[in-house]
Image (cartoon, rainbow, N blue to C red; front, side, top):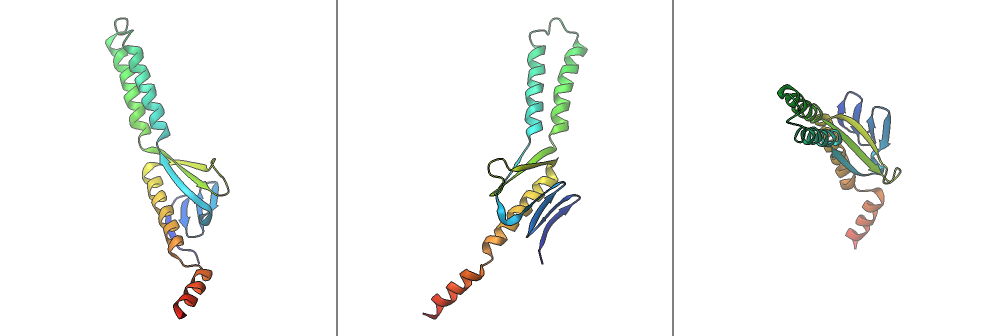
Length: 139
C-alpha cells in the first residue's frame, strides 16, 4: 500500500508515483526536482523593455501613454508572480525531465511532498541491507 504525501486536484504524490495532469512518474526513479518562476522573469524583462522604450521617447509620449507602459509592465509582473513551473528530473528522462505549470503555492507543496517521499525511501532499509546488517550483528 502506498502512502499518500500530497493531493490537490490533478496533482498527487504517493510513495510509489508522482502524478501531475497528464504526466506520471515512479517516485523511485526521481533524481531531482526544480521549482522556478519562468513567466515572472519574462514579464520582468518585458517590463524593463517597456520602461527602456519610454525613456528615449518620453518627450514624444503623453503622460497617460507613459503610465500605460508602466502599468502594463507592473501588471504583467503582478499577474505572473504566483505562477510557476515544477521540473522533475529522473533516471528515465535524463536532463530533459518534465515540467508542470501551476500556482506556486501548490507546486511548492508538491515539491516538499516529493522530497519527503524521496527521504522516506532513503530511510527505508532494503531487504538485502537488513540481511547484511543481521549477519554483522551476530558476529
